[in-house]
Length: 373
Ligand SMILES: Cc1ncc(C[n+]2csc(CCOP(=O)(O)OP(=O)(O)O)c2C)c(N)n1
Ligand SMILES: [Mg+2]
Image (cartoon, rainbow, N blue to C red; front, top):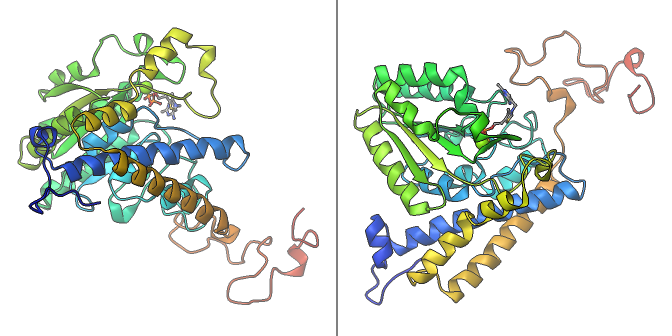
């Protein structure tokens, strides 16, 4: 979508100018937030419909994710995301189809070919490191990437993202200490939603802000309102510029809200009061950003209608596409696990067609007409 003023130049409202962006940038950011939300909402519907076994959601985090990822160079810098990073992954180049293929664990799922848990996104060509299930381990991967980038003079920045609960893991101390000592091109983003599953922040942290811990490493620590997309963009840009120009790492803590339960296997009304949930909904970044862009005259009725229709079509297409793709071939289950294509001499007995022979599994290995027990 191109937004131009009557002279044909990219239009720049006062709001866009104050952020160092154009109106087209703002609309692209808003579209990313809205698309991430729509994909996420579809995943919940699919879960309730029995189509998606497990959903873990980024709802409430999208504004911070888009604002913080926006100043990075796509396909050049690196992000080690976490399971709520749907908007981060879209902002960094993954498509709704890519995300939905992971949700359905299909064979062509770019995140892992259906091997990872749902929500464990990743994409090598977009420089998105596959999500680690043990929380916080991704910070070590990202700091390693930052070290490699510095040694090889690649001008890359690496970012690790996680929740505030995960930020208490020992890996975080090791990674920040190392990154700070070596002034690595690294940014640590903590998306603080006030809960680690059912545990409230007061029982996770002895401080109000995770960001104060940055001083223990001699690096800047920044708290930013995660519902303010442009504040997140500004904080991200400053930290990324510093990292890229040799100034070392930054810890950015974005205060966000978790609009859903921890996952589709959790019921947050068991441990959150109605007041708490209602308060959380007032920090939803989607309507806040929408109102901001409408007030600035950047988002009009016409643009919004077109965008909504486009997003609905993308979500529909992504769902249909993922539904229509085949499940992974069981014979490929250990691909990428062992250096050799298959660790045994014989193909697995349950494989219908032994690779290279076209004859199927040996008869003595078959346990039934369909090859199952
Ligand atoms: C090392 C490790 N311990 C525990 C878990 C189980 N676990 C998964 S998510 C989670 C909560 C993380 O909370 P937080 O870091 O605040 O992220 P949020 O889900 O709130 O975004 C826990 C304890 C895990 N995956 N890995
Ligand atoms: Mg949390």
